[in-house]
Length: 183
Image 1 (cartoon, rainbow, N blue to C red):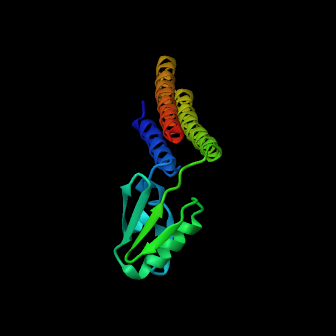
Image 2: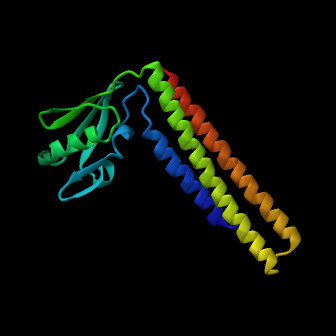
Image 3: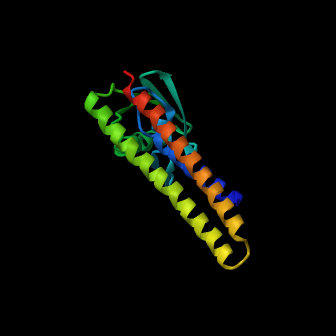
């Protein structure tokens, strides 16, 4: 089987993992803010990518963001507020403190619903990779590059990799749902 198929599916899992880490639980985690887009220095980029600040969890309910350049602390605060994550950053001297509020039962259910949508999107992307791989294999069979036995073998391999990746996505979902339901 083409290693590109496995690599594409792995990329889908990596994207999904990063996406799920942005779904907040009741616990402080740097991943809640590291992908927020900040406008600074005449451009805009994600807080983590621009390496504008260090992000840490000082306890289970508080994040601290310490900008490397104190002159952009206001832009970072504004970006966090505008991200719509329900976080309220407060400037405290040369750092930003973000208190992570407890999640209500209603908000937990909303986040689980959002998480399930993200999981389903991940499954759709994996199935799209499978579809493209199957089309490629069928094309090789039609061109007589591979025989009928090889076609069946490759299709089974592609399906097995797909099933494994779907299982990993479902496991990610189970773990995230457990996190969301913890108080």
